[in-house]
Length: 176
Length: 243
Image (cartoon, rainbow over all chains, first blue to last red):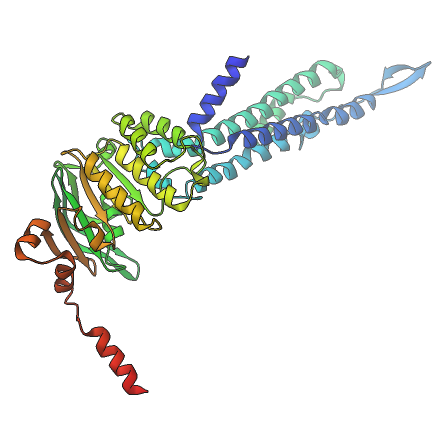
C-alpha cells in the first residue's frame, strides 16, 4: 500500500507542473469525490419512499403489494444524484487552467518548458491530472449508476416495474 | 554555427526586429547591445522559438526543433526557474530533461556563490535568483547560451565575479550571446559586439578590431549611433536660455 502511494506520488510529481502544490489539490478533489458519493446515496432516500408507497399495511405491520402499484422509473429517481461527479469533472477545467498559469507565477518557467527536448511535457503536465479527474469522476458516476440500477431492478417487485428500463437508462447516458 | 537569416518580427503597432542577419560561431562570446526597444529581447526570443518570425534560424544548418533545442539555453531577467523548487530539485529536473547537464559545474557554481541547495528559489534574494538563473543556463549542457540582461538587480561586485568565473569555466565549444546595457563592464569579457538599433543590426565588430583601431566599445557604440557628444550641453544651454 505504502509503495502504491509512493508510486502515485511519483506519478503526480512527473505529471503536474514542477513544484505545483498538487497535494492540497488532490486532497480537495478526493473530498469533493466523497461528498459527491454521499450525495449520490440520496438516491436511496427517494427510492425508499417510492418503494414503501408500493405496499399497504394489512395486519400487525405486515405489508402487501398494492393493487396496480407502479414504481417510479429509474431515470427519474437517479436524476440529479450524480451531479457532484459532473461538477468535479467540470472543475478539472479550472485545474488545467491553474496548471497553465502556474508557469507564469513568480517567474516565466514557461520559457524552460518550451525549451525542453520533450516538448509535449508542458501540455502533459498541464492536462494529465485534470484528465484523470474527469475520467475518474465520470467513471464513478457511470459505475454508481449501474450499481444503483442493478439494486433497483433486483429489489423492486417485477410487477411494479414499467417496461424498457434498460432503454430508459441508456437514454440518460445519451442525453448526458 | 547559429545562423540567423533575414529574421523579422513585427508586433501589432510597433517594430520588433527587421531583416536581421547574424552568424555566431562556436566558442564566441558575443555582446548584444542596443537602446531600450532596439529588439534585443525579441531577437533572443525568436532564436529560442518563443516568438513567430519571418526568415530562418538554423543551428548547424538544421532548423531549431525539439531535436536540437537542448543545444540552446537561456538566462533571462524575467527568470525561467520554478520558484517552488529548490536548486537540488532543479538539478534533478534538468538531469532528467537535459542529458548533458553539467553536474560538477553546477555544484562548483552553487558553492562559489554560496547559494543554499535545499531552499526554495522563491526565498532567494533577487540577486541570488539572478545568479541561480545564470547557473542553470550554464549547466544545462547547451552549446549556445543566450542571456538577456541576466544581472539586472545584482551589484557590481557580484557581476564582476560572474564574468571572471564565466571566463574561467567556458569551454571552447560554448558560445555566449549576452544582451546587456552594461557596455563597459562586459568589454573585457566579450570577443565581439553586435549593435542593434531600431530593430536592425547597426554594427558588428570584434574586440580585436576595436583594439587595433584604438577605440573602446563605448566609442564604437557612440560612433555607430551617431551620438552627439554635446547633446547634454546643448539641452542645458537651451533650458537656461529659456529661463
